[in-house]
Structures are given as structure tokens and as C-alpha cells.
View 1 (cartoon, rainbow, N blue to C red):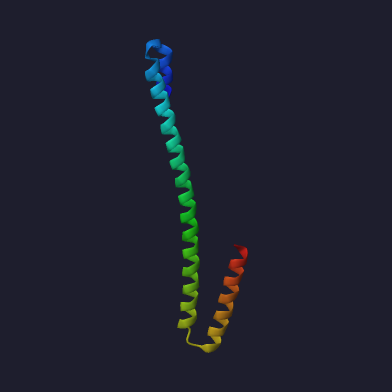
View 2: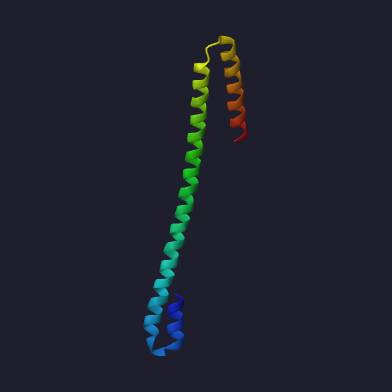
Length: 93
């Protein structure tokens, strides 16, 4: 873009070329800005998806811990703590 402006300032007879260079520079800048905007949106969506996968992983891990507990009294206590933790975590989000 700046090349077209410099050419139009230095060489008066290259007016059409300077318009072409300036226009193509503006077009490239618009396309790159659009690509950065789309990239930003994609990264935000990936972050949300990753966070939801972590939530599912934590829930499944809690179920596995409860399942592997052999003593029934401990199992009930662990399940109660697990439910309290998961409910508290969902309320803070």
C-alpha cells in the first residue's frame, strides 16, 4: 500500500500503476484483518470446547473413584462430596 503512495508521489506518469498497487495493498490488508478475526473466533470456540471436555473428564473420574471404593460407608461419603463439588463448580461457572 505504501509502495503505491510513494510511486504516485515520485513519478507522476505512473498514476495508474500507483492506484493499482495501493488498491491491491488495501485488499491484502482487508483480507488479513478478516483472517485474524476468524482465527480469534476459532480460538475462543476451541477454548470453550476444551473446557467442556475437562468438565466431562472430571465427572467421569469422580464416577470411577466412587466405583473403585470398596467400603460402603466411605463410598457414600465420597459420593456426597463429589456431588457437592460438582454442584458448587457448576454454580461458579
